[in-house]
Image 1 (cartoon, helix red, strand yellow):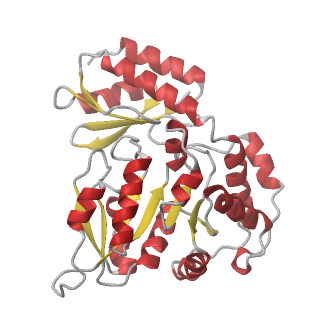
Image 2 (cartoon, helix red, strand yellow):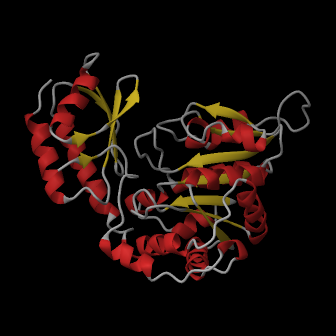
Image 3 (cartoon, helix red, strand yellow):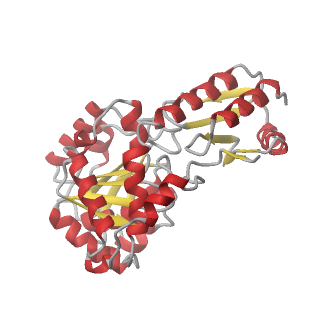
Length: 341
């Protein structure tokens, strides 16, 4: 039995999800004739209280289209220095939109309204790029699944409105934040101009993200999605998986969070642990006391058929997810309790 805790992207559709996918109502989505995809887009838009939504094959493409919507070549977007749109989207902001990134040193991937105000450029200054977009990530991947407080996001919205700057949310793991903080999607719909949400991480669908926004922006997004090669045909089989996930797999995220917290508590007892980022959702990021212990730990866990990921500079990551069952969790906890480096 291999236990893969490298990411929550490793999940496979459950038999129930597969059955739901087979029954999808499909058509040509390029012509907006796919019944299940149309249903998903309407359902998610209504959930967030936003005007429209568009299905994407990946969160990266959804984010890149959002950046394209809100910027012109030569503009500047503001984001945290470890954010996904900057570090892990292959330079897409520069390639697709021709924008530069102003990088803020945040707190576990989270930035403040005051920091954003400081980094905004003066639109009348011809020597600097014009700030036209702020990108927020919630939860933060490199920050160990940390969540924003709504009050801070509302302050950020005020700054963006005052300075006529658009605000995009990379909500790849927003479902985790909603469950952890007992928040409602509509609260986020009121704050952001666009939001991307993913179904292939914590919710267990095989593929798919949705971009939310105004009708005008989503109509433009339809063209940009095509431009980037994201026009698809019978997407309903994938959208059906996302619909099933939306209806059945959101509340169960509490279980992933609980198990992550238990792993955190176990690691805190080990003498070879140096630091653990406080666990809020399903991600545990930590490092070891001595150089080389990270590689040794990965090796020892692999020998026990437990896979975790290396993040560089000695930091390690464990991610709990839908396929991580209770029997696996008991085995991992027992293994960690006995493990010495």
